[in-house]
Image 1 (cartoon, helix red, strand yellow):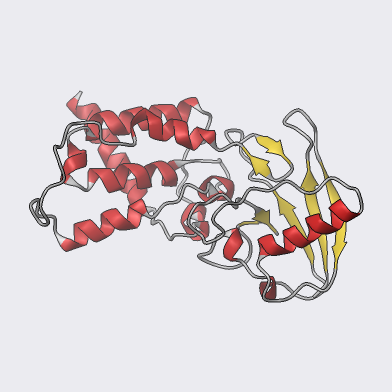
Image 2: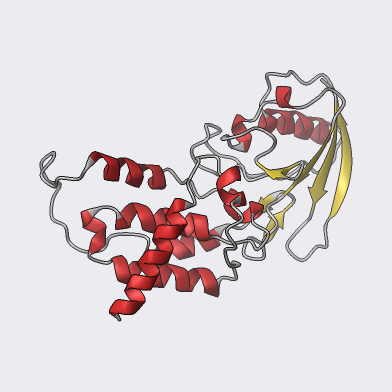
Length: 247
């Protein structure tokens, strides 16, 4: 398969950036998107040119590092997958593919397709953990948790923090990410002790870092590779309201 790649190149955060066009040929339809970029970079290196910088780590859809905006969609045209799980058979032979970094003020571009998502870490540090002493690991089933609650908590915990929700949102809102992190702890008894403090701290940090507000368009849920439901945003709002009422 042959493709024309329109790739965003930006030398550093202060550079204005621009699109550059590359031609690439004889790509296997079974190659992953990142493997295709590897092939492009090998070609650029042989030609003495600067390779395209992009993020990756596990390449198994677990870490969330492969944050690329492909043809107007976070992680590309396939559903429920990260970029590393996207295969070239999802594109047409001869197609022009536009590749950009996440576009959000809170995710500044480091170089080319790499953005700094340290803002998510700061939100987690603000309260996305349990700091109370819960003792040693209890015996199995010592703390009864209904099955449907446990499943919902695990569904929220599936968030990999890739930032697709922010990239998909017209306001660059991080509500789905924050909601997932708040929700999975708020659902479990160990997380209830600090629930009020946690939700207020995380939302305050999210606002401080410049993420936009949620307008319930649902784009975040549609583009989330782990199918995190916007129902968790409703729980986040309830937790925040209750925390303020208690205060």
